[in-house]
Image (cartoon, helix red, strand yellow):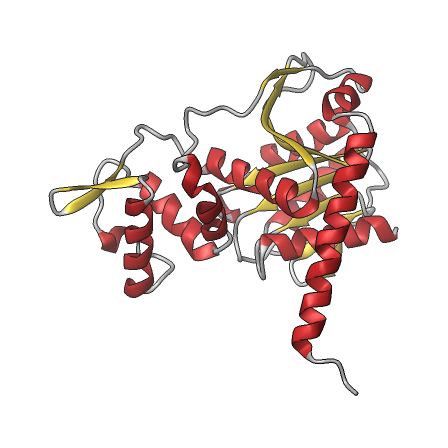
Length: 278
């Protein structure tokens, strides 16, 4: 007798929950993230800055996290922040229909992120410099909630040779993952940012490094060539940037270039699958 698709889905959900539970148990039995960093000569100086973080009250966090799974909602929220002092619904309707945008406006008003100002809306918390910090929080939540990882984000170290923030650092079992999280489209990414990412990866030496872009646009057109050029600059025999599938790429199954086509969660599952199969 064939197994129904809903039974398959239930079994898959059970297995995912069980893997997450086992990983959380293993995380508690292995050294914490602070100790893994200390062994590499790193000590956290600052982390998880709140100044530009756009979050609702605690009782709405789970709902907000679920909304953030939608690419159209993240684009909407990015535009809300861009026009934070005063905006109409038309100004934040870039990637969704009018009906969906009105639903988003109703939701963010209800959970206390925006308020009416005459015939327009405005962000309650102002000023906020960009969507970047909120996106870092969201990616960190994915690692924590969906993969059972211990996570810190918006991390600063006192390192004289390599500066800048480490957007997300996660501990899986006894391994470290470093993710650079970009909210800008590919056209706004420059070679200096690829260099900085590879410098930080070399300095921290995590088991997995992810260059993550919150876009559904192609990585092959600009981002992959930027990586190839930087790798050539660093070595006479540079490793190849290889396609995993669609617009997901890897470098020696340790450094991954990822966009959000399909979903962030699905793409990160693919990254872990490639890493653990190597």
